[in-house]
Structures are given as structure tokens and as C-alpha cells.
Length: 310
Image 1 (tube, rainbow, N blue to C red):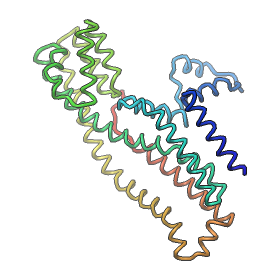
Image 2 (image 1 turned 90 degrees about the vertical axis):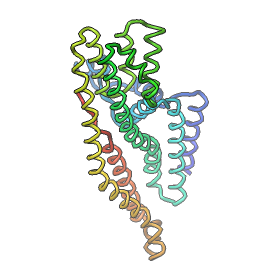
Image 3 (image 1 turned 180 degrees about the horizontal axis):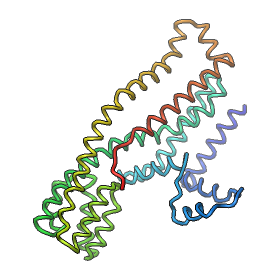
Image 4 (image 1 turned 120 degrees about the vertical axis):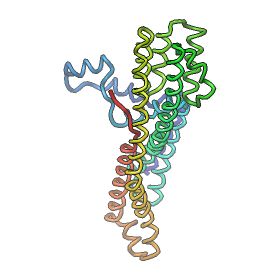
């Protein structure tokens, strides 16, 4: 009965979020803001709060990372759908735990299945980031070559805009429109372009282009910056080969752990009944599930692209 009340409460919260179009992040921020302070903030904490450099943690960090990934891939509008999918999977996981009559699995399935869509987005982002770095290497190389010849970044981009692929194409196309139709200040347009791609190497290249507007002799600094993308591609390929075997072994072990439950049913039904219908068996399932979700979280955290950091 208590489980049904919890599920009804979750459905009610989901309905309210849908009705009033409230973002879960905004709701968490509001709840956090009304939380009473238990201790006085230090000067360091106040400075980080004012400068907006305080690192987010836990669920808030995961949600902010997901929003950033969707924004970079041009799919920011899907965040609301992913949030609703997360809530739906969470409720489905809790219903499944009730169906197999294991109350210990209700919070575990609820949290684990709720995080699954966000983990998937982070895994897809790793592949997207590698593709973005590969496209940036090609684009910056051809644009730099043209810029060294004509001494005009606008002309260099115009000559190669047809050969630039998405998502970099839209970024440079907006730069051309901004610099030719809206603002004639090249440096301001470059500063705006600098913030549109999340890449330290790209930002460093833009900074060098801005410096070249004042001193054309600095054009020689552009090629070494682009070579960093080549180094990143090589290191990323080597890292992928190193991580492939451990990740494959983890997936095999996780599949075997899940497959063991129906396998026990066919091998020995008494063991299956002990696992599914006794307190010790239910506790064992709960512990194994927690370990599985923690392991998946670790794999997602370690599966990230190689990047230069200044």
C-alpha cells in the first residue's frame, strides 16, 4: 500500500511539472535557495559564489552537463523530453521492483533508471566530441591556409564555407552574417564566435586570430595551435584502443550478472526461490544492482574525449 502511495505521488509530481512547464533544475535551485543555512559561508565560498566558479556536484552536475551537451549539439529543446523520459523510467523501475516483490529494489531501480538517459547522453557526447575535433582540425587547417594568403579572416572563411560540415558550418556561417550584416567590428564578431564551440584549442585559435588583427606577423602562431588537434586525435585513438578491452569485459560481466537470474531458474528452482523470495536473496539482489549501477556510472565518467587544457 505504501509503495502505491509513493508511485501515485511520483505521478502527481510529474503531472504538475508537465502542467506548469517547470524545469527540474529550476525546481532544485528554488528548493536549495529556501534551505536554511546551517553554517556561515567562508570567504572562499562567497568568492566562488559571486564569480560563479563554484563546482556543481552530484545530480546538479549531471543535469548541467547534459544541458551543455544538448546545447552544443543543437538539441537543447530535447532536455525536457529527456527529463520526462527519466521520470518515466524511474516509475517503471519502481513498478518492476514491486512486481517482483522486492521493496529494497524500489529506490535502487528508481534512481538507477532515472539516471540512464543522462548516462546515455554523456556516452553519445564522447563520440560527438571526437567527431567535432576531427572536423575542427580540417576546418581550421584550410581556413588558416587561406588566411595566411589573403590576410582577411572573412575572406578565408567565405572561400571555404562550402566545404565545412555541420555543426561547425552553422557556427562559421553565423559569424559571416554577423560580421557582414550586423557588426563591422571583426574583433567583437570573433569574440562572439569564440564562445560558440566548447573547445580550448578552438578558443586559443580565435585568440591568435584576434592578435593577428593587430600584428600580421603573428600568423605563424596559428599552425602550432592546429597541430594540437592532430595530437588529440592520435592520443584519442590510442586511448580508445586501451579502453576497448576493459569496457568490453565490463559489458560481458554485466550481461552475465543479469543473465544469471533466469539461468538459476532453469538450473535449480529452489535456488531461484531463495534468491527472489527470501530476505537474504532480496538483499543480495539489491547489493548486486547497486554495484552494477555504480560501475556503469564509473564507465560513463571515464569514457570522455581527450582535450587540451590551458
